[in-house]
Image (cartoon, rainbow, N blue to C red; front, side, top):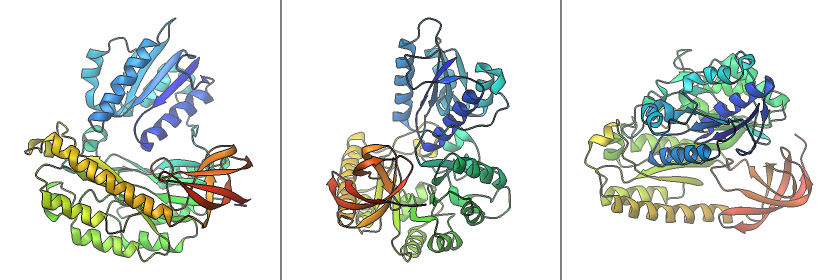
Length: 421
C-alpha cells in the first residue's frame, strides 16, 4: 500500500499527521510525497477560521480529481469535527471521514497491523514539535477551538519524556512545545502548573540542545516559567505570547481573561531576560473595535516590544460568542488588516537589520550549498528564515553563521564553522 498524506493547518495537526505516518510506515505501508503515485490519500484538515475551511475544500476537490484505478481518499481532523455532516453531503466520493478522536480507527481501517503501533515519523529536519496538550478551556469569544477539540487536556509527563527521548534518538536537536495554552500545562492532571518541571526534565535528555515555548497564554504564564527561560541553557531565549489586543474593553469583550496591566507586567518581566525575543499575534476588526482602540493597539505593538508579529483579520465564526455581536464592515476590517501588515513588515525588518553583521548559532533544515535554517531568536515556519551559504551543509546540524544582509524580511548568512552540540 502506498500512502500520501496532506497535512493542513497548524503544527498541532502536523504532529497528528506524523503519528499517522509513523504507525502506517511501521506496519509496512510505503509512504510517498506524491498524491499521483499512491493508493491512499489521507487529508488531515483544519477548520479554525473561514480560510482554513476553504483550503480544506479546495484540497478535497484536488484529491478527488486524482482518484482513479481504485485510489481512495480519507479525510480526517478538525474540519470533520466541525463540519462533518456538511462535508459528507457535499463530497460523497470520499471513502472515509474521521474526527480527531477517530484517528486510531482510521489507522486500523487502512492497516489492521498498525492499530496498536505507536510510532512517529518526523517530517522536519533537526527540530520537531511536541504537543503537550489538546483542546482549550479558555473559551475566548472569537475562537472555535473548544467546540472543535473540547476542553483542555494535558498529556502525561512520562509519555512526553519518552517521546522526547525517541525524537532525540532520531536526530532531533530542538523540541518546540505546542498546545492551545502551553503555560496551563499540568493544571488539570497534576493540580498545579507543571510547565517548568516539564522543561527541566526535557532539558536532561541527551541530544536535545534547544527547547522552545509556543502558544504561551498571558493569563496562565507565571514567574517560574519566565525565570526558567532566563536560567536554563537549553531553553531558547524566545517566547510566543499571543496578546490579541491591548484595549481593556476589547480584551473583556474577547473574554481573554486578562487586562492591559497584566499584559504589560508579563512583557516587562520577559524583557528583563537578556537577548529575549518575543513573538505575538493580534486580531484586528473585532466587533465594536473603534478607531481609537485600533490606534491604541497599533501604538502598543509599534513600541518595539516584539520581534515577531502575526496579524489576523477578525473572522465571524458561527457558534462563537462574538458571532452574536454587531459586526464591523468587511472593508473596514480589510483596511485595518493592511495597516497592521504594514506595521508588521516595518517592525520585523527593523529588528532583522539590527542583527546583520552579528554571528548566531543556526539549525539548518536542508542540505547542500544553499540552505535555510533558523536561530534561537526565531521559530521555524512562522518567523523570518535565515538563508545560509556554505559547502556540503547538512540538515539537522548547527552552524555558526555570520549575518551578511537581508532578503526581504529574511536574513542572509555565511557559514563560519560547524558547531558541536
